Image (cartoon, rainbow, N blue to C red):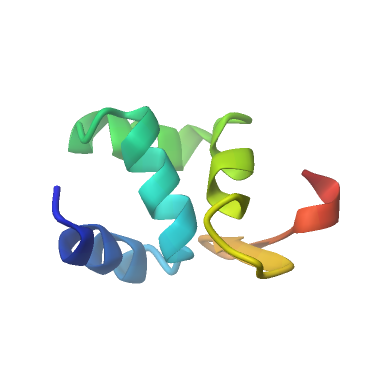
Length: 70
């Protein structure tokens, strides 16, 4: 999936782009698996996502995630 498609996927789900990118990396660009990871969560996603940004907070849907809690 292209970067712009991942950003669109993230926007629809009100999820930070970094989290979406991490989900797709862990899902090996499999959109079905990415959706499952997004719905069910995965502890592996957050360290990868925060490594992509200097932001202190990211959003996974309606959930605000603080870097210091990762």
